[in-house]
Length: 176
Image (tube, rainbow, N blue to C red; front, side, top):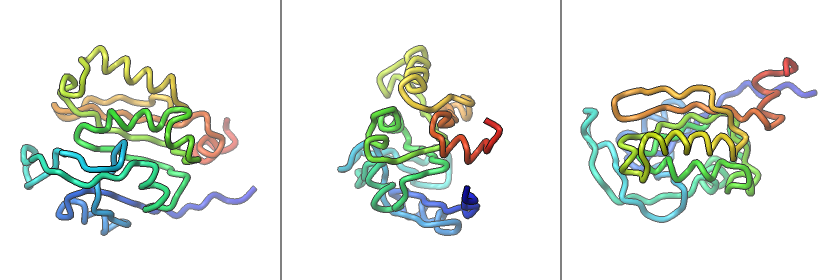
């Protein structure tokens, strides 16, 4: 059996160069939004140093699988962070079994998603939000490891792909 590659490579995408360029310090930065589908999006973007400094701006968007395959050029992602200021809800189905990533041969081992309030803005209340999280876990190979209520405006959900042999071996080795 070959040794696993210990090198960490970081790729970040943000449509606002002023904030996204910080990714260049630790990896590769792409000045684009990543979403559920390619096109343009009226997005909530940071427009100043304060937590309340967000504004709406039309930005170009590339779909997640195209971003991973064509920009990042990887089909195995060890840890995917999603913080889309709302459109993250539309991205979850892409990660389900037979979803867009699965059909294109992309494996994600760990998933960290910031889910924004208020839920009603995205079409569901807190109870429906809970059902959506459970539905995602049921229709995907991801197991919900932690759901943390962060700042007053969001939850952070951490999932692990417990059914992919590469992921299980990479993070648990021969212990499983």
